[in-house]
Length: 357
Length: 250
Image 1 (spheres, each protein chain N blue to C red):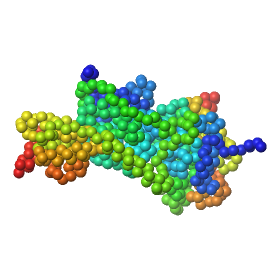
Image 2 (image 1 turned 90 degrees about the horizontal axis):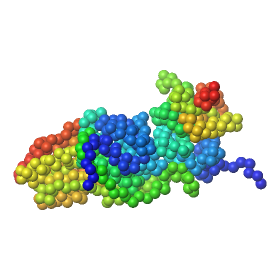
Image 3 (image 1 turned 60 degrees about the horizontal axis):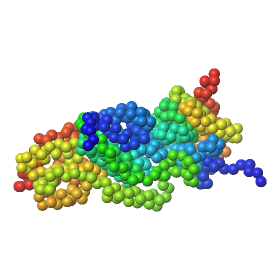
Image 4 (image 1 turned 120 degrees about the vertical axis):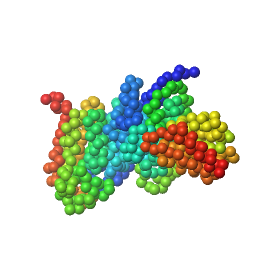
């Protein structure tokens, strides 16, 4: 078994990217993720790789377009409002089918909000703020170990689909320290990047990285191609974890730090005989719709409780998955406040009372 | 039979979409010839952003990027940083470079990125139909300055070659025009020198080309040439603005 090491979240996630073969990192400082560019600024050059501090997030995402489009494994990280500035570029990367990894270490919003952890970017990440039909695989790790493993895999996911892959963590995962093990994450079988615009080097035709179409029919055809790709992602990349859902009467649905707090709630209440389970999406796009639908369909399940560090964004996907089979309750804390075990437990107990009424 | 002139291999056979009398075609030709003469068609990567140059990726035969409005210097920076031995260039208009992309060009220049930027200054937004640009002259009528640009409303036009030359990262900056053969030859020399200095690692290299936009200026091609010489050249003086190799020689 690998040796456990104590790491700070942001530094561990940066190291995971280096281990995944990230060729170039570009970023702009923003709390609570600045340890990532700081770590990269020292360690990427030591590995003979590229680090560049960008003049803005707007420029950053275009650095990814250039380096990713010329065939390199590229990454950036930012937080919430910084990611908002990258939205146009994300649309371009999607439209030009340029792979990249973008890590959003979410904080409280809207606007400047707070530097404390938040999850109010669920819409921004899964629905996007940019133009056009596009989707990104959004990996949502629930702890540091999962975060470093997922980051190592995210580069392969990006390359496999020629599409940006997003890592969606809340600031708590970036800021806390905990022990992790370095795993050899299984490598995917990836095709060579024959499409990259990195100089013709004897190629008969020139490669072009672009998003423009003149003829609407051509753009429609391209969008159909993208749609097929997104369907493949939905088929292959859905991830979730179920904890004590089999006989549960109340099922908490939460991701990231609220899921971790909810796990303590499940342990605490189960010890008191309350039949509560946890359904934790590990990808928020594609959303584990079918799995959650099946859980909601169980006879044992009376109510669903969605817990978020926002005023309710993922709840839309919970509703779409549950499809009215069972009532859905919501509990959220926003602006950088993390819900406590006691608060969530109280909500579960309320749901239990509602269920027997 | 002797071949006395032929199209550069740096260009594809795709027909240009540019309007009659527009200087883009000549500028493309000069860049393509430079790449061919430097044996760089197989290694160069070009970046053309939004504007009239949005289709330039179809015309150059080297690998190309089509970039978001204003962001070509960022895209080119990343290509160059990850492929340091290959020539990388951007081809940008004035709305793109001096307005929406002002931050990216300033920082690429400030860092001394070893890229070449060809800046097409035609004092107007061409692709969108003739709106005012940061380079539009005082008094010049456009669709968004219908009574003529005023200092009160929009300030003075920006001289990008001079502005960027204040940055230490800039190795070479020259302003040229394409109105006649002597100027065309000077432009070719400037472009070639910029690419050569880039490959020597001298720093950021910049060639500003004063260009016509007969369609949006509302002139015939010949009158557009005349207007450029009489109105643009006095405000945007031609010649070398900065050359670090000459400064070292001094």
